[in-house]
Image 1: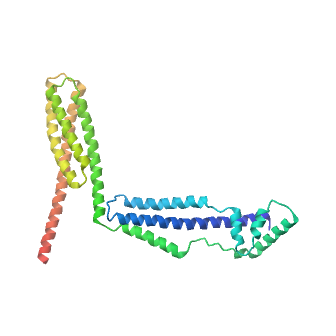
Image 2 (image 1 turned 45 degrees about the horizontal axis):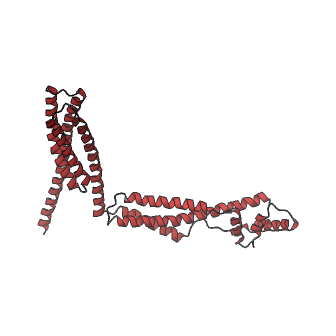
Image 3 (image 1 turned 180 degrees about the vertical axis):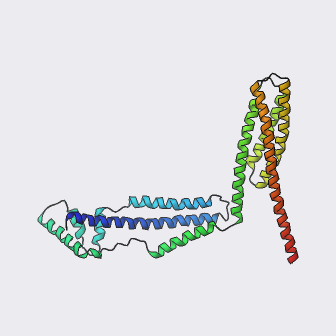
Length: 307
């Protein structure tokens, strides 16, 4: 058996040892990640956590990453692989032959030939299990099944988390919308040709929008969001009429710039359009609420007939 073949055999077992070590570390890391996912899913029944499923998946991905890094750091080199092979009854012949591959001498040559001869005769004794124990794999599968099962179990807390997320999303969109309107009104209020009354009128619009902005920022439930939307709809209707009247009066009298006058007209049209959209949205929400109340009422009547 040539030296190259001798090294090739050691490299083969080194790869197997590294793969076995990686699978063992991966199993351990995934058990920790799955345990963290179980804790998160259980916490979601008590605390509203909208992204709990993503957090559980992230814990498993981090576990895989940790296993890859750990396996790379603790990878087995050639000498360590030779030592492991020696444990299968070779009495340190393999590691001694590997360490003396580049050295010459009668004793060294005899030791190397003896190691190669023993390895040739008893290579089948080297048995390195690749897969982790079945019980540990079964444990991991059970934990993963539990994480998945908990993700599909409904609860009031999960519904509340979904509602809070929806409220925050809609409130954020309305907040951006109101901030843009406030900024536009502030620019219009700086027009020098406006009378103090007209500037005060624009300032009142700004304060009304800032009040609605504060309400949306503080909304934490669908009820608070609906109340803020209802108020905003009323403000949009009034502001659209006021802005149209203001633009008409400026067009007939005051010497404002053409850009400012066009901006006011566009603002009036925008407010009118937004008022219609807001009204339609509120009507849809109200219809959904009435349907829910009607279903509850029917359920109550049915219960009464049963009793």
